[in-house]
Amino acid sequence: MKTKIKEFRAKKNLTQEELAKKVDVSRQTILYIERGEYNPSLLLAMNICKILKCKVEDLFIPSKGGSK
Image 1 (tube, rainbow, N blue to C red):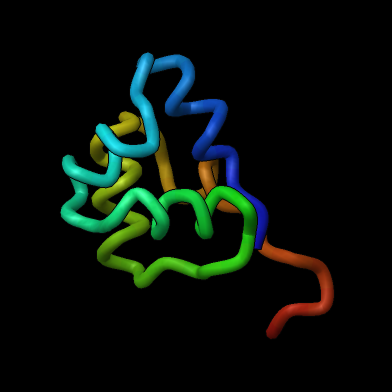
Image 2 (image 1 turned 60 degrees about the horizontal axis):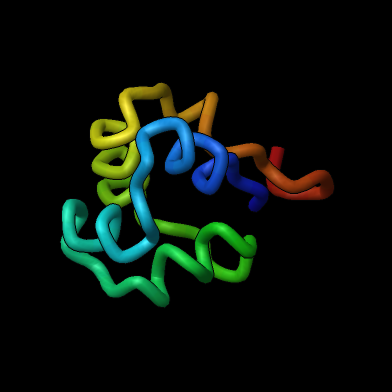
């Protein structure tokens, strides 16, 4: 899954470490989500959106060929 976390983080002047602390995960988790190497749980996705003040559908872009 592609994300726009890095872009939204930049708008809020947050580092990966700062965002990770706010949503109670490791910096590496944020890194892997940003790279598309890890799909967050719904709860984590919603917490990230709450911090970045955006909607889930604005932040996460489903990959083509996924489930319908």
